[in-house]
Length: 220
Image (cartoon, rainbow, N blue to C red):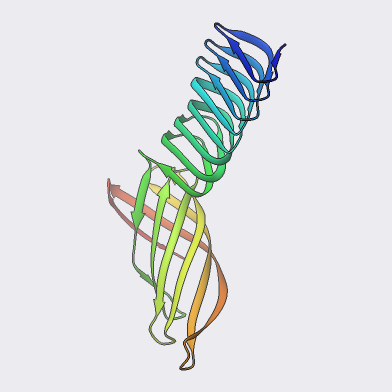
């Protein structure tokens, strides 16, 4: 156990509990629990729990990173915070307001999840209720964000929505399941008062990819 009212520092590897009132730093690998009020830094591989306002792991992280901002090279475990950043999201989960990773084999769940080498696509569709919508999807194959924008020409309504989806692949065939919450707005009267209501959608899309960037699909 290493503890301090202000700063705790270890110049090599550390096993156990490292705690301080402000700042913890370990220059080597870490196994155990690292907890501080403001900042945790572990330069090597980390196995255990990091908890602070800002957490940083300079190499592979296995365990739980919990704070407002979490940063790691590779995550096999869970990042829980407002902003989560990882070069590679391995067999892990990012749960936050904003998630970022270069590559994601794991599951990023957030209001905005950016996967630099992930999938991005959009399409234009018409629906039975009169809406023409442009949904934009981005993320990993396991889970991705959906942002939808639409207009109903008959009822003069606008819609904007956010949701999440999952893609199941069966060779060249695929099934996408998406849940989207749309907010519909319509101007009422000459004063321009907006009437707002929500519309929830569950969409299932079946498709077949002929080659990269070309597929045919349909759904409900």
